[in-house]
Length: 157
Image (cartoon, rainbow, N blue to C red):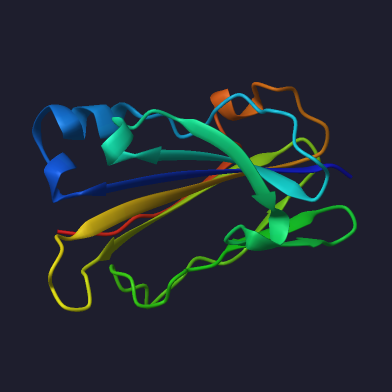
């Protein structure tokens, strides 16, 4: 059964916590049309503050994406990993894995806040969005409403 993964990674600093920059960041999509990638790879889209949150597509090996995928016969078990473990907000209770049936898709979001070790740089933030589908799909699948949504975004003030 086909497994398709799209990883959307958005990163910013305090400069984009308010005003026009925050509006641009908040308007960034959580899903994009798929591009062709080799098997065992995920489509990645990176949006960073320095580029005005302009989407940049690439691909990475599935094992490098922050989700654990396990085919359980008639279902796909999906669980997002929290990486790195020292990022805020704390996540004492995590949701259970999601089991997708063929034709279903999942959007799982996690956010983080970091400071530099020496406190030299400003806070930085990122949002990981994992779009995962099980079964054959068309290129615009991640532009529609997901079957399952897991929102693990917490306060990062």
